[in-house]
Length: 217
Length: 217
Image: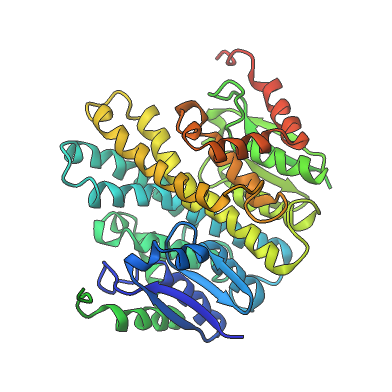
């Protein structure tokens, strides 16, 4: 059965790979599954046809036969559970890798999203300059704990897993802020993720779409 | 094998059930698994013994034989996958229920957490009064989409599932703000969750611990 995912018709980041379809592309590349992409405009994302697939009007979605999923975490977990390459063989190791997926999305990403919101949506507000350091410190608190746990290991728990895929993807959102570079072990961890051939294929596939100018009209 | 979870020694909400151990207790009650609770003080949560279990120094954790997990979402998924009662039997239905777990934690809870942060950690800041309505509107945007998807159904996708358990738990965090009551279908959905006998047992178990005064010293 053909796997079809959705992605932005035009990406605001100009191809930096920060849109969440890159996470799903990466997972599919790691397990060697081909996929097709349907591009969705910002306008179409809020219309009934797309809302039927994704109730929050976002990308990515995942369709395979009569299965339709949304939520990046759920899609990556679905891929990881059905194909070899993203979860360990033993049950306990699998449960721990899945734990790191949730940790990336539920514990590490929220302060990073709050930081992005503070810069992008509230950057012109009167409180922005005074508030931003508070938000940055919340991000640093999490990264300090994460760096301490990672230590000198290559990956969070044994071999590379879907947990690492998600954590690297979440941390990549911080690169332009400079905060990631304050944590050399995490910066090296992210670089190891980016160096994986599957990541490069996923990144290149979205770059081809987004490196041009935005569509007119 | 005995299941042992961790919970706060003293809960700042005085027993409202908003600490995340309630979500794990609820899942264990739904599937009928007994469990033990180890209480952890705020100080002990940041010490090496607990950080070895939970790298971000939080509760709950989950121990069963030689398996140790952290992250509420991961723990609830682990329980749901190993015992009947929280996931449908068919593979596609299971994947969709897991999607709602991720939606609760990754899409609905972040703006709710931001709202809690704005009230609790930034309530005394000069920008608080002007900024809070912006944050509340981000919460409303999500709730509007969620209410639209739920419609007149009892649960998000067929019978009650781990996805509903997580979504109801996330929405409960909003009750004191009054925002939930702006969405009658969601308020009724949360009330249906609270009316489940398993939720009541979980709630009562934490209430016994937290309805007293904080420990001294």
